[in-house]
Amino acid sequence: MSTTTEQDLKDRTLLGTPGAGGRGVGRPVIINTEKKIVKPEKVNEDRIDDEVELIEKALDELVKEFEGLKKINNEEDVADVMESQVQLLRDPELKKSILGKIQDQKFKAVYAIFSSFNEYIQLLENTEANWLKDRTIDVVSIRDQLIDTVRNKQPDYIHADNGVIFAEELSPTEMIKLSRFNLAGIVTEKGGLTSHVVILAHSLGIPCVIGVDWKRMRPEDFEFVMIDGDVGSVLFEPTDRLKEEVELYKQEKLRKEGIALQWASEPDETECGCSFTIRGNVEFISELPRIKTHGARGIGLLRTETILFESGGFDVQTQIDFYRQVAEASGEDPVIIRLFDAGGDKLPENHEVEHNPFLGWRGIRMLLDKPDLLRQQYEAILRVSAEYRGKIKILVPMISHMQQIEKAKDILEDVKDELRDSGVEFDSDIPFGIMIEVPGIAMMAKEAAEEVDFFSIGTNDLTQYMLAVDRGNGKISSLYQPSHPSIWRMIQFVVNASKEAGIPISVCGEMASNPLYAACFLGMGISDLSMTTNSIPAVKEMLCTHSLAEFKEKSTQVLNARTFSDVNLIFSEWQKKLELHHT
Ligand code: PEP
Ligand code: MG
Image 1 (cartoon, rainbow, N blue to C red):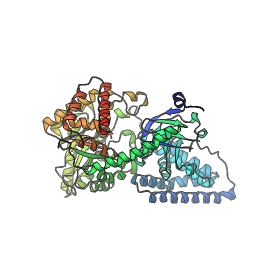
Image 2: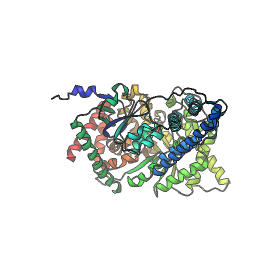
Image 3: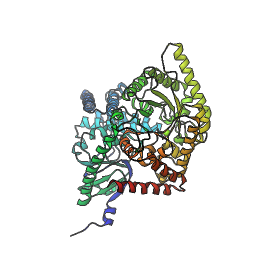
Image 4: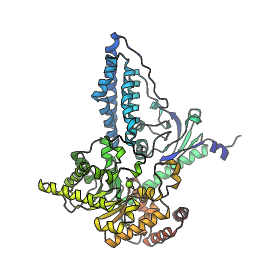
């Protein structure tokens, strides 16, 4: 009888980047791996009408399919993606181009689609903008689906149930179609951590690993695959024991999620009776219901660039509708609206490529250069504030210079004057706060605190700027360490400045989602935390079941540590102690 050695398992394991957490086992399902190539083929004059009819029918069929998917899926971001596909299929310019290639240039329908879509794809690719690149993936997928529809070909994913999907990359549409099946996991070769495939996998609860060079393993030669989205591994042909472990893990995960959710309705108090506040970070409308179910006290960070990305438009009325919907969902609790933090590369009309967009034209830098955009956003927020007095706050991203605070405030006052003159109501005391995410302004916290109503610490950017590590660069990802002692000390410095000035402070970066980090923030004097809604129950459980004295003791240790390994050791030992206590 043969036994499986550690080495065998290692040889059958591929590593990638963790995209969405969780573990799963399933059969490998390979989709979408070949690039479609369609050769130019001419059509006889007497067949032109037939080819045109094929196009009309295929367009109708796909529009119907997308609209159907939109109806059966309640997730708002899913509906938005579907809507943008329908809009593309109904785009009169695109259709004109396809029909022109058939009627004038006498090409067959499939080539006319291929060529017209490719011209559009080329335009998108030339911009080098991240969000437009995500869109490119989707346009390629619609192109291929349209070609398959004309050719009457069945899609690969009809066998996806209980499978682990292997793809070069997946478009949002493909993700949504796949979400109808019970997927064990997703493995892709390409795709960034901010890509739709990762965002949707996360919100659909499907384990996902990206950046995996999977083709060399020939997944089709294996019966089962095990995926671990937390560590980013893919194991071909797991042993029976490993498969059983995954089953137990899934049951345990469900059990823990159920218990943690019970904390949502508990009072926001530590074991010793000190109060804290947990709010939600919101990016998509679909996340709004979780504000209530997961026990968030309102929204501590509304990332408004989503409106720009999802709808492609950000006129005042679109924004008002969006903010109103958000304000309604958070009931009596506050909503902190962060101004657009879209970099220059994300603006549709900007085709200039920045060499280092993270050090580039984003957040307040871009808004001050585009005062009309800033004014529109202020106007929309102010108009909505009239209906929700005392609830809406303004948060400015990427402040690095004191003058930017001054300018952003001046423009706000200007917009207020204009609205006043036109008799428009608004909350004239609307609080004005800034993100502390650039070290340059963090060091000026005392002075900045004199000028604003509150601080919100953005640890995602603060970490990358403090340590000079691009948060999207895989080569140096081991240096992206939020546990680096300098980050904790910088945060403490900012907390002290805010206390001295008497202004509220919160943390809204990913660090707050970690229950142990969150506990340390409480120990350091930050009792207001905002995080991804899914993380709230576990953080709340941690904060409710321990005392502030314990949090203070740990934060003191962390603040005195020398290296990030020392900090990690403090946290891992603490975690072990908590687990021991639990069993
Ligand atoms: C941050 O930088 O920590 C933050 C919350 O903002 P974003 O992740 O949107 O840059
Ligand atoms: Mg940020």
